[in-house]
Image (cartoon, rainbow, N blue to C red; front, side):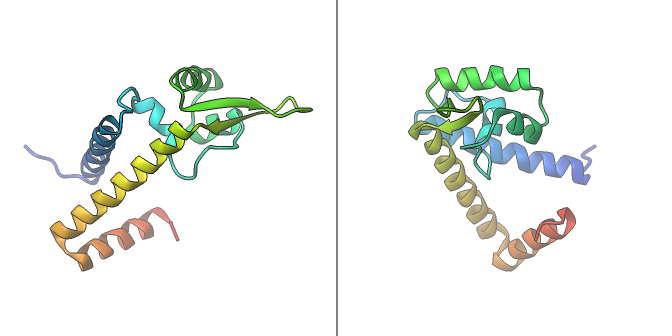
Length: 138
């Protein structure tokens, strides 16, 4: 029995988007990233943010975030920077980290174009408008 409830359909759409992003990242030489890492490459970028703010945004513990940050630092995607004269740490993407964001954005643009080609420009525009309305996004 194939249940096509909204929850399942939304999950399937998210899984397709993630699958395409991972393929594109692998093709771009960044196949060392995994799902928990991707949270740090969403829009808006975390570059310049404090780790505590990022943990709140991602709804994870500071300890879990520190583990992920350590991995991403070791892989060369970001760095933790303490500004001179301050005890505040901020996160900065490296060039490689900005590349993840670029590849992810380009992949999502291709996904949208593919879906628009599949169902038509008007239906896709209606789909996006409906999602925005349901989610309260301007």
